[in-house]
Length: 106
Image 1 (tube, rainbow, N blue to C red):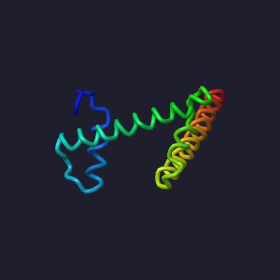
Image 2 (cartoon, rainbow, N blue to C red):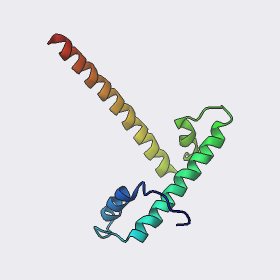
Image 3 (cartoon, helix red, strand yellow):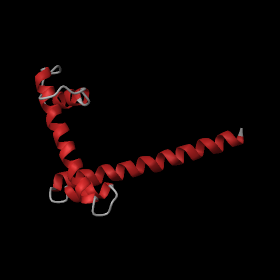
Image 4 (cartoon, one colour):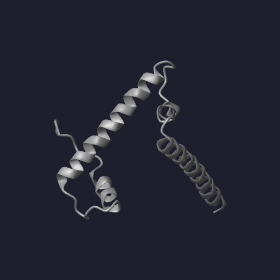
């Protein structure tokens, strides 16, 4: 790595590597390399999305969807994750409303 950065994804990458057939404790160099690639990908996508959003003046989730639209695997994964996020929000809201009602009835 050219600059030392705090490891942000090493735990998750380690688990993913193991899930895809690597050893339980992969080399730190392997994790560092993957983390660098992930960081560069996120940085590149964020910069591209910011360029797309400059036309509107506001960064939105749709900017990222627009960038991956030509890659079916990424596109459908993004759509799936966005749907799951909405379902989680709805479930949390319903759970919170139920808790408020129960507290009011006590």
